[in-house]
Image (tube, rainbow, N blue to C red; front, side):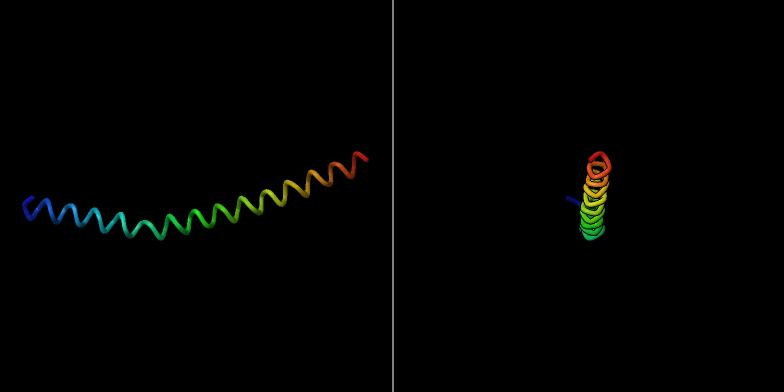
Length: 53
């Protein structure tokens, strides 16, 4: 592997490593949003049940 290829590889590797925290933050945010949406859905379903009864 020549120096140019090594530099290209390590530059790519650095970019991949730098994206991980962003992806982790994205996943955490999506999990939080999903949890919130599930709570809202359960509340709406409960309201629907109470209205029907």
